[in-house]
Amino acid sequence: MTETADHRPIRTFHPRRGRMSSRHHDAHTELWPRYGLTVEDGDRTPLDLGRLFGRANPVVLEIGFGMGDTTAAMAAADPGRGYLGVEVHTPGIGNLLALVGEKDLTNVRVAHGDAMELVHRIAPGALDAVHVFFPDPWPKARHHKRRLIRPGNVALLRERLRPGGLLHCATDWPHYAEAMAETLAADPGLEPAGDDRAGRPETKFERRGNEAGRPITDLRFQRRA
Image 1 (cartoon, helix red, strand yellow):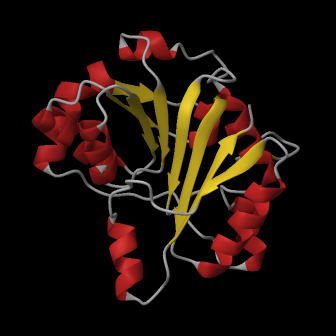
Image 2: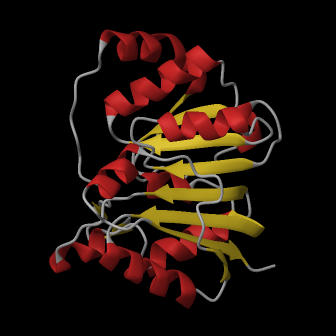
């Protein structure tokens, strides 16, 4: 996300609408007050991650978690870290909250809104990792300015990582993968940390990409010490 001269943010996502199922709605009603966080455009109030999670654990930021299945799986397998997922799709938020309740995932928090607006509220060096799995590729050239992985955003994400913290991206669009690799490699504060999936569960978007014959690319970079 960047801002224009009149301060309107350039969105890195398609606004999507969808109706919540009764399961999602019930989970949202019950669990949002405890696990939810609303992201407001322009809000720069510092976010106290320790207070948000109720403990001072390392935190992973999950940007655009979709329906939340991958986030829930990773959080369940990694109870020593907190997982802060941010999404704009309300059925996905409802589904992740339902999974939080069903799996008793006390290390997950769910944010609704623009991810880069949320990032502005996080202190430099506060994150253990940032995951950007299968973001909108915005394939048309005139829309490339909306891509999440571009220099200004990468610099902001890197600043929020602790030294040695990991920025893990994945995509099934080859041209976006090339652009991602160039952008990440060009950031002076990042260094390569491998191109394997490193325990990342398979996502719905990944399955669709595989079915369509598109190669899956994982890019992992860490903040220089």
